[in-house]
Amino acid sequence: MAELETRELEYFLGVADELHFGRAAARLSIAQPALSKAIQRIETRLGVPLFIRSSRHVELTPAGQALQEHGRHALNAVSAAVQSARRAGDPSGHLRLVLKPGGDAGLLSTILAEYAHQHDARRVDILFSGPADRVDFLRDGRADVGLLYVPFDDLDGLDHETLHAEDRVVVVPSGHRLARRASVRRSDLEGETLPRWRGVPGGDGTGPEVADVIQLLHMITANRMIGVLPRSLVEPVPAGLVCVPVTDAPPSRLVLAWNEQDRRPMVASFVAAALRSRLSGEDGEGRGVRNDDG
Image (cartoon, rainbow, N blue to C red; front, top):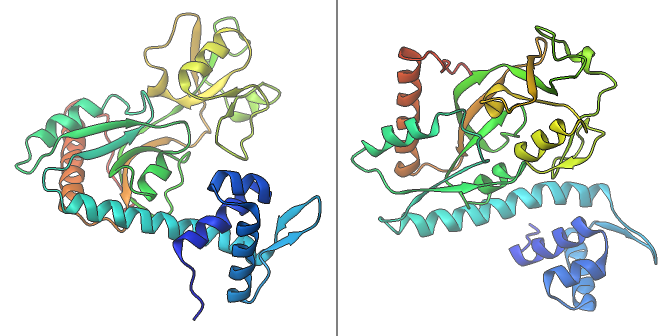
């Protein structure tokens, strides 16, 4: 059975990402001839070509595309396993929670307070991510649990529990043509300039690139674009802006997620506390929703 070492996978993924041996070699801190020979050894061992090479162009073959997808998952799994082993051997280790700034729907303090009552509670380190890399934190072991938004974040390889569901709103300047509407449909947004989120490929936006909600709201205030967001991300609504419900947009769900291979008691304890805080919210403010998907 053909097998690859993790270092070889890193070499392959470096070239697959860059599609340029020189740039990949610089990124990997390896000489370009050595990198070329390493890729040739991998192809020989697997018995298939991974790249189509020419003097001006490098592209992945179908076999290379398959290895890129599954190889990245494999490296993430190895990294997560190493991180988990180190933390399992440290009974005083902290629990790391990743979220985007402001991306907790106002629930974080309640969750942390509930978790603090656990007899085995640990210190919780809060990690702030970019607009699209929270999932990577969980897959490669940099974080233990994370607050993600569905359908925006990809839950492949993750277990999760829904904590909160809410409608989505279009955010527009107060003088915009839609600002006085009680509600809109997605068809009403045709022709409008929407943002391109940094690090999120394949989006529908045609406007300037934005890195976070704060930057987006500044651009909307400047009449450069409009945006569609979960309602909680724009509460309180900044002066000069208006939020209008988008009636046919699927609801946004805030979920607590963790690596599906992670069975550590520390993670299970935090998940249990988060679910208790959700039930408390249902009894009190009524903001939480019952999780029907797992």
